[in-house]
Image 1 (tube, rainbow, N blue to C red):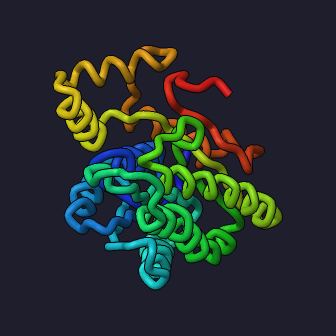
Image 2: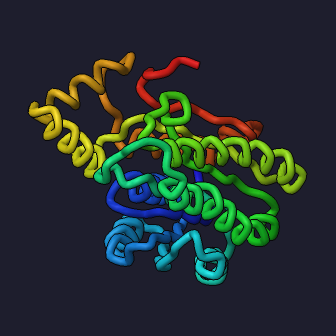
Length: 259
């Protein structure tokens, strides 16, 4: 589906970012990966190469415009072009800290990363997407836009703003043949969610499995999805199979919401 294409994936770690990079590679794309944590990059780059594709890894903090440009320029220089950008880098409030009501300081980090960082990474990639004659941008948003958790108000608000910004970008970049869509996942089984379940279980004095099962039962499919299942949806938006879709958000949450 992606033979001859080059993708950039930000926010690559052991969870969704890794799954997206590997899914795009398995579909034929060469992949440039970025993350703040350098130790996450090399193992994923090796997994991409094990699938027969080229990989470049660049330490990237998306809140730094120069680092965003370095990732985009390195992808174009070493892999020949840029056709796809997946903005996966994100930040949340620290839910280990006590929550005592609205605190604007808690919102700075998620807004800086999730909104302005995504826009900075998009801005850096645009010259290369235009040079390739168009392409696809996929922004990862969240279920939290619809099911708001007070302790994650900054995270949810930043992703809601990103959703609107993506619609604006779809209008602005459409004449260049650049599509912009969002994937809004619900709970994704992985290290971070397990840690969150452990945290909630400890507060309640129950086993983590109790929390897991309660969350899963709130989904129509009565289960929690994997990073690989979300990555399949990202692949759809990056491929020609979605060539007439732009400015849209697809909820991927096992039926937790139905609108």
